[in-house]
Amino acid sequence: MTTTLMAIGGAADFEEPVIFKEFIKRSGGAKARIVILSQASGLKDTGKGYVKTFRDLGVKHKPIALEFRERKDADKPKHLNALRNASGIFITGGTQMRITSMIGGTDFESVLLAAYRRGAVICGTSAGTAIMSKVMIAYGRGGATPREGLARFSPGIGFTDKIIFDQRFRQRDRLGRLAYAVSMNPGLLGVGVDENTCAIVEDDRRVTVLGRNAITIVDGKDMISTNVAEATGSRPIAISGLTIYMLTEGCSFDMKGRTASIPNLVLQ
Image 1: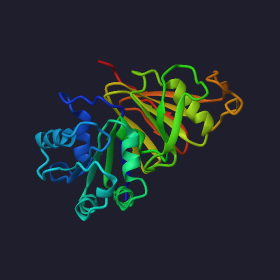
Image 2: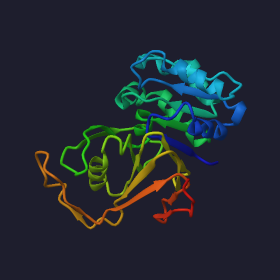
Image 3: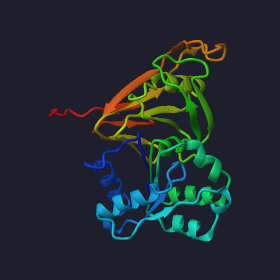
């Protein structure tokens, strides 16, 4: 059974919905059974908006928006059953800590992870991308230079324990904080996703790129040295041996072999 994560950097285009169409296709096309989790959003009608989007794009089964906002409501039988029947689960943007604090340690979280393992496509945007990692960037600042304290970490949902995601990547100048995150966790692959762009991760082995901008991969596997353990007070971090890849639509990355494939495309 193939497992699939679709990590959107935020601000996906509703007018040219290439990424949403790919999510629907991978979730079963017109017969997709989509569940929307809007807990990260501070807006009450976020889920309803995505229901309309997916219906307008041809999904015949009305998507289910689970709009609960209190932890005590997470494990209601109707919520767990919706996850068990889903072929695609969409996690909206907002604030990632709203999601993890609301469902972390619940039956809802366990059923959500089980849905992913059985093949339901997990698609998230912005905060919905951040929570995919086992180690999650909870808060942080922008900047091109890695600095002590540039990011704060907490447990995510943990669909993958091989990647740490960052989102709205180039638009918010987050290379420094992802490099900082990887210097602290060099066994993880840093994947920064630009707005209106999606990193598609299959079986925790292969990443492909879809969308208008790029993803940035920060690989610490061959990191030689860093002073991250000694730096204090927002001082810059020294790192040697990081490998950085910048990949656009059509490119792919082999997570096991740590190699990128860039096709010979004629740019329009």
